[in-house]
Image 1 (cartoon, protein in one colour):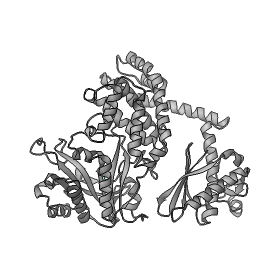
Image 2 (spheres, helix red, strand yellow):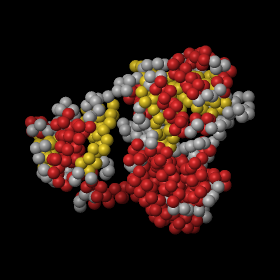
Image 3 (spheres, helix red, strand yellow):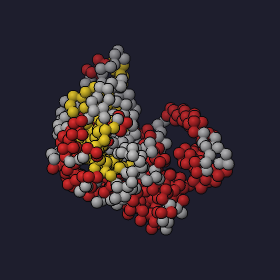
Image 4 (cartoon, rainbow, N blue to C red):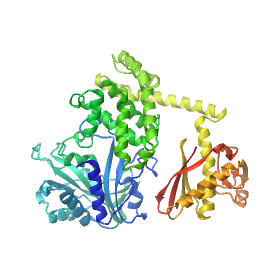
Length: 581
Ligand code: SER
């Protein structure tokens, strides 16, 4: 079975059980700025697990793109991956343990045709205040799983969540497949570090919400959240002990071997790092994130630069990373359309970042060899970062290979000092005129006001702003509205904004008292403002909105406005992404 067949079989099965198939959310969590990436299928579902109504009903299923960054340095062994896909099915206050376990059993034994005797399951053994999960054990047993294959384990093994500090969580029942290899000893059971039992699926019975204070409260509704890692499942289904040798990566190994002339067996670690990192990089670039020194952009930079380093170990070939990215675009683009849409961006940014690092890596390696006769000081690590573009993690990896240490703490202090200095520099620059990026974002700020006004005209006065976020590439605007916008509404909104841009309307700011601003009908959040004056921006008589600015002087500076996406954020809230071109 290959990846596509598994995903299709899973979604079809749950569809036949009354689940609505929903689209994977973006890799970047939309409502949680505290984490860089979605790390589990349930993360985008959290609001609904907490009781919000989902427009597709109370039985959902999907395949979700996920990235975990904690283990990037471990990639190269047999099982760690940066990007992975998680299949999931959810009951939002609908079915609970009995149906959930029966569905899993049916899918594994009837669809995937796994011998039921090979199935082992774990259930929560209980603790003060939370009972032992005899109910799940009984359900498994009734389905035919023998008592010897049912294992009771404590919280470390059989409790899932919350994904962050607080949120929905609960006891789970985890499903393992016995690989048939000899156990490591009499205590061996699922959850053991030896590879006898491989986990294939996790069914979480989310009845609790952990509060910020650390208390467990019963949720309003009993939910089911299950997760099956696609790569892990393929490892089992393909009868392998190693994710890189499944049907998923075999064609990729072949590409690397053909281009480099090197054999996987002799260069396992570098092969795996490159295959994993370029896959993750392709999917992250597909979200229109570009490499940078911050947040997701920095993770991306690390992934690409580390791939470049390992590509050099295989005898660098210019087409390698590009060809791999193209392979992944073809493989994942049919499931996640943004990968196709952003194909050029992916290839261009990957190439730019690769070239940037190639320009300095050789000299950087010479420098590293010079300074690595002893432990690497903070200053030297910073020099490698600053002048040769070595992410600290690469310096660390090189140092480990030489069995020397790096002063990471000192490096972080240097880095912080440098950041403060460059921030002061940027502020100086800002005083003298807007930086390039700021000019683009300024335009998008003005375009956001115009979109807000246009939506009011097209959809009616009740719709109002819920949120806004602007990057140099695009604007994102959330607003209240009950349903999906029609193509005609989107077209009229876009046309209205463009018509107003073409009218060359002046953008004028006035400082007004709140009473004056309200009297003039300006939009804005006035609730938390008392007594002070507020800035109101007028775009001709098309838009009046309270805002801190900055904005362009005339709408003709904006160019052409284009809506690229319209989607749901939550019940009653829609989101539009738009660009200026
Ligand atoms: N949230 C659980 C997991 O990630 C099940 O989906 O394993």
